Image (cartoon, rainbow over all chains, first blue to last red; front, side):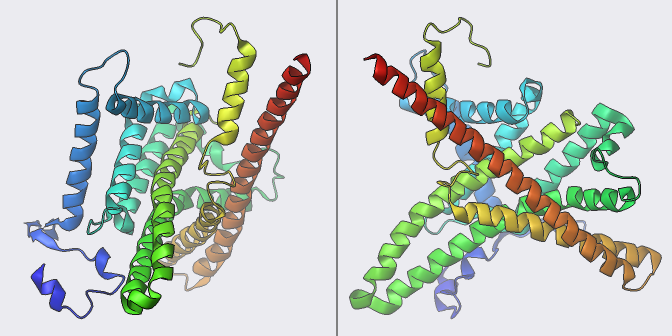
Length: 250
Length: 119
């Protein structure tokens, strides 16, 4: 950390996204080092586990504050799934809940100063999104067999246009993991860069002129907390919508 | 949770509460409160991702078949078409959600007026 203070780029708004190896490791020529990103994933998972297990330890009929927070997050995801997938999707609740909590906690942990935002790296969000994409596709083929390909053939299209439309539908389907991951990553990275830039303005303008960017920063942090929650929600909701497409062909 | 175990005695209250909750839900991803920024991000991500997917598909086909830049060009434009399709679909979903909210709010107001008249 002390080397960072001498680094002339330490105040660059992008410095916060740098990956640092804590425990260098190699596995078959692939770099699998334990990095600051891995550390914050572990912290997020630990925080989720502690939050849910400690707050549900009592399991009282009249919930305490912590217990109602845990119940609230459960009900929030359960309601969302019921609205988008219906009751037949309840089997996949653990998956969607895990996904939602992981994205939510990594987003929220990123709001703590000096913390690393795991979801600001596209490789992380893309890995999550492609897991969802591949899982949903496999599920669709298991449920409907080859009939799942009917997803690419909309109703009431003239036979002449069919080859064109099918290709466009396939591209649209393939774009799902990209849009899912880019949305989360771009939101987190843009927000955190903006925060850092305006933080820099406060320091540069000093005691006399720094109040305006300070006020903006305070407001923007509020917005970022909202975005952190909203993007976790959007990620989970879109997962549910894709799940719904795979379960109920129309 | 899906079904009420016992039919609630005040059905109207339940529905009114539900409608009010839905109408006032803060930060609904498609609502105007959640932020026009979110909507813009969502739509632009939908558009751009399809163009990227189309381009990548075309590039891959070119690489497989060795057909020069033609597949890339073709699939780039197909990608744009798919992106516009994505945007239209998302926008339709958002409109439908907004209309449902507006309808819920309308019925809520009507009910409120009805109860006002009773008193």
